[in-house]
Amino acid sequence: MQPNVVSLSESDSVQDPTDFPPSSIAPGLRDLDDSLRCPICRELYTAPVTLSCGHCYCSLCIRNSLSSKAECPICRQNASEVHIRKNPAMESVVKSWASGRDFILGLLKPQEDHRTSPSVDSQGKASNTQPDSPSKKRKRTTDDTLTSAAGERKLTPGISKAQVQCPMCNQTVPERTINQHLDSGCQSYLSEASSSGTRGQQKEQWSKVFGNSGITHRNKDKGKAKEKEKEKDGDPDGLSDVDPLPKVSYNVLKDKLIQEYLTEHGLPTNGGRDACIARHQKWVMLFNANLDRSPANRQSLDQLKRELKKWEEAQQTRKHSVTDVVAYQKEHKSEFERLKEEARRRIPDKTSNSAAASGIIVIDDDE
Image 1 (cartoon, rainbow, N blue to C red):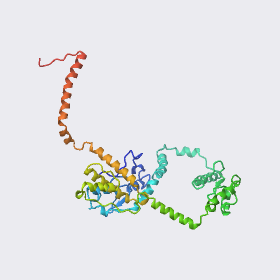
Image 2: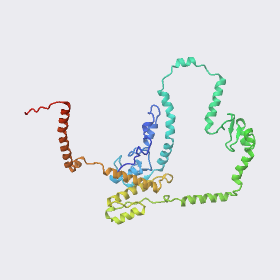
Image 3: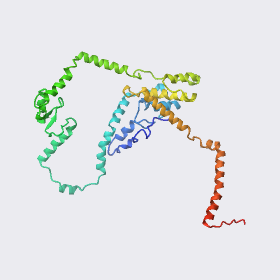
Image 4: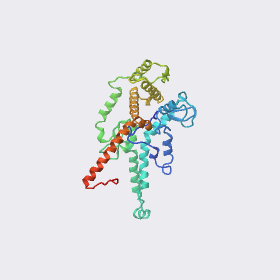
């Protein structure tokens, strides 16, 4: 069984803990990234689960491992699928880390560039640099404050920095009167550019709340409840409350019953008995590993079927590869001998032709 490894074709680049600087530059980040990776596939945990010994793995990785050897790959303690327990806390941590990983690397890159940049003569820099006057320092501080607040207060294009956008009514307001504007309920202290269209925009905004809809708070609550029911009823897979698939003793089952198991889950029934058994075994692993994810992160049945198809195609490719070189040589020994004999026949012809073409006479020592 192959671990749950992401191929290069599925990802633009292979992520690795060494993406982060060493501990001397960024203490703890490389170790943190490494601790959030599965010991089997070395990728960030997908549907993390723990065994009774406490070691954590991807659900699909450990299920594949236990199918071949019923023990923990790290401590070798006896284990089986009944010892698998979900680890939602780890899943939440990994999800948060994955979402902020690139951002942290982006923050560290300027520091690395600064460390690797050529050093500047501190004495020359100090001699050519004049101390900033208090007015310049005060001006730079104001600009930095406006820049740092750009993510929270978006400045309207084309308007000076003294104008800001109200977070309540989205109107342009002088910065010095923003507090008074909020205290007045967004009714006063507007800039001249936006005061003309204030009434119409406010009317439109209030109409969205109380206007033609005519929805009371009670009706809103009922509508939200209906939407939740629709979302629940609209789940085509029905994975919100599903039990894991049980293991099957294929040795006591007939081929027809195995095919019925596949048909029950909408899986193909082509191939021989061994192919159908392998297909159903892999499907049980994929299905149960998917249930170990939190409901918000679960894959759909169509996604699982596509993953199963990729796995079968990979298995077909592996069948055509040579696994036992000695057995392959014995099986094709006669063909190898024929090819060697043909190669020997060609060698004298090429030698004589090349000698004749160059005008060299070949003398046999026996004559």
